Amino acid sequence: MAKFTNVLLVEDDPITIMVCDRIIKMSAFAENVTSCENGKKAIDFLNNQRTASLDFPEVIFLDINMPVMNGWDFLEEFEKVQHSFTTLPRIYILSSTVDPEDYKKAKSYSSVEDFISKPLSKEFLDNIE
Image 1 (cartoon, rainbow, N blue to C red):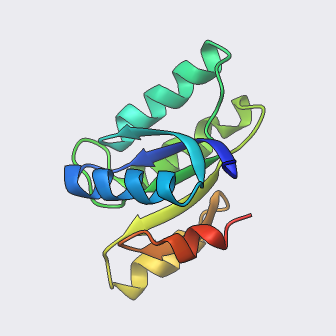
Image 2: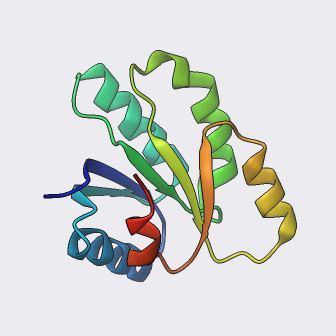
């Protein structure tokens, strides 16, 4: 039995999406994984889920560097609309950055639980309750 029902992966790299999807499913972390290739599509997805009263993701794994709307812009937009959601997902930054400023910036968002260095691992998933 999976820990969570729905996970949203906001990531533009197809290889990373495939790897994350496989790790999430093989570790029984979530039953369903939805991916959006940029922050704009993710915000649209969340708004559509809310409007249609569909199941909301309990966890979001968010890349920083993406086209159209990057992870930081997604967080800015999410914080503007999060009051309209009945339940809030846990957001984890999933990035390959080594810039200390990115770690510091991530901590400035109340909606961000933690910063994960790519690749996503079963060990990290095991520690999320």
